[in-house]
Image (cartoon, rainbow, N blue to C red; front, side):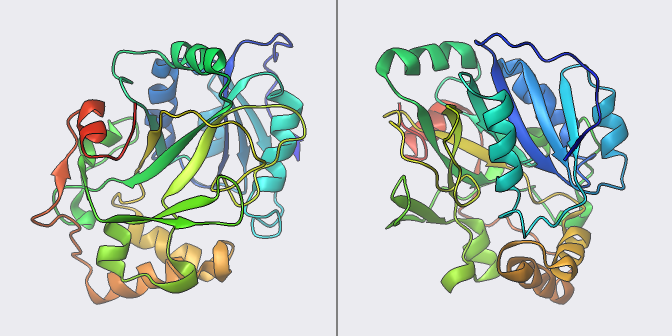
Length: 298
């Protein structure tokens, strides 16, 4: 893994640091960085895995981004977790760390007005070391192909709809010993069996060297979790979704050789004007709304 930037990295603790693996995410990264800066993230450690869409040039222009690059196989690295775990050990030890994808925005009870450092200080006081989150798929009003999204626009404004239910909790062998399933991807794409997307993660962790994410951020070394839970607002469904599904299905670098993306691509070929919203969809209004729906907990 090669470092591309030359920004100094402070050795002192106390910062909230975000960690990402990206590939061709120039569309989503501007709002992702701005959202997490506003929450109180101090700096970003980002691994680029072969982008060709301007992602690298954009990230190198950001003074709070430390950029690394690797051409190696995403699948062979346990879907980026070998890279992320090494970077967390090197630059996350003693910090609250946020490990996310470029299409995920962290939300928690009161995130509109409560800064993330205050939340982390509260978790420290309680002796908690991690925050469990639902991965909440967000989608637009109309057809995915027609969404007029440009880099830097608000992802939440572009894709304000979500499925409020049904979701189910399933026991899991690895910590945190439960995983969530359900939502719009099961409803629309008909997932079942081993390729059903997991819609829960533990992205916010007070990192200590030697901890490990085991299955993306769905599972990790056991740590004390907060009673409070959050959400990762998930913005997979922009206007580039059809092309990305075809590319990733062909690359085969994601779980099960990209089978999830083959399912997406198959349905999008059958229905290019696919719309995800239905009569049960709910428009995002506030973190309080997510708490009242049981999708987050105080």
